[in-house]
Image 1: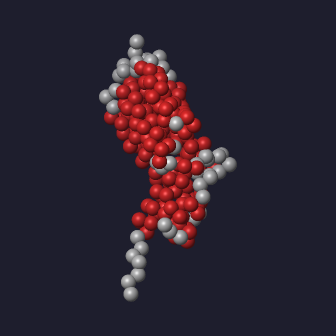
Image 2: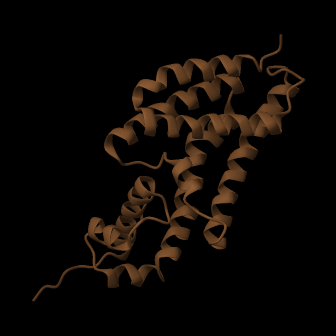
Image 3: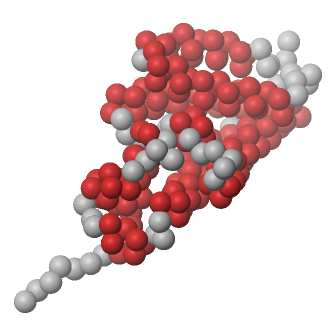
Length: 203
């Protein structure tokens, strides 16, 4: 008699993918384990074989998924950019397109505002993990702006730390705008975001 071949790596990957879809749809705290189990096509016992519980699953997903996402979408491109502001324009354009797609399909890992807002300080481990993600994101943008200042592609008077906070607020605000107003808001947001970034260039 041949039994089913178990593949723990594939099972864990399915769980993480289903968890991510649920987190991006509902936020981390509101996500239901039963929904994740059902989407993964596994038993709850199988989930607990890989994770100790709901918080452990969320913590592992945050640590394994979000740094890679930010690395691919933001960090690598800012580090290698010949022009930091042009790179930011391209990233914002892709982010807006991804928000539109996620809004339409209900899936994706582009719901950073939803994720950040869904973890409260009363859950210190998850809150700390999300704060570290946000801090690394801010640091990458701030460092790119500082580099642009040194190489005279960005106005010397700007405060990179503050502008980086504003740029992240722009991105997170775009997500919320698309979620509430739909894709029709995207074109105007992109025009305004591009115009703002152009004000950071030397006169």
